[in-house]
Length: 382
Image (tube, rainbow, N blue to C red):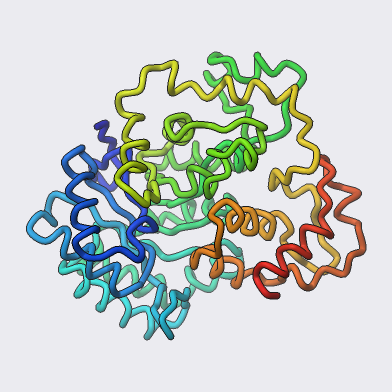
């Protein structure tokens, strides 16, 4: 296992870490066995975004007696109501959920306390100018969280958090499908090793800027959505027309500036092992360039690359975000609670599409956006 320092926290975390999605719906015995498997292979880091009480209690039981050797990243502003996970900005609910979280995890502190899911600039200002941040500061000063972070999918908002000086860690979605811009004329040069010497010309400038800012400021990045909800592992769903392996996906994320660890949502020990294969994989197996070099032969037509060129929407819909969340449900063959909740918090939803078609005239990839909004509205129910 490779261990990296998580920014200025000083925490030494395993480069391959665990998301909590894979432990949903499992018994306490199954969760304990999975953690035994992971710990025996060097994993020492887990993200627990979900307030599901059974999940938390099972993980707490699995870590009992070895808590001091394991790093827990828990989330503020998540609550469990009517048997489902919800994001909240209510200070009282946030406080109560945090206390319950510690009890369920059988610990008196979190190594990292993440303010959960801030994607909108308005929401960022509400959180950072209000009681939620003041509460997080108090928890940190009391040692009940050792480091403070946020989770986000928006590079602008994540940058605002880093520039505030308040956060030590950013949990961010990183993978080629989310990062890449359309291919240039000389694809081989674009993906050549020397192209990475000074700047990451293959990725969106705002994302590049965020990763490099985190590196300079000592803000650690841990990664979510490394497989793009499974899209990148599927030849059918991959925007590159070819599937990447788990090893290639991890290599991509772990070679971005500022990144310390990847939180992999593994549903089985086989999937944990597939992610751990990165640790011993030779350079040839880690190399993701052969997949990306096919870009000049791939039309890109009809594939939403979440580039945002379709904006602004007449109805105010964040089309890229709607498409991303919809594609995650397709890849995961269901409606995961995280995706459902992220979609819910969007200011405008797919059902509000007025079918004006302005977005389609601006899309560089010929995506049939009106039809995509209809599919999303049907999938999410609004």
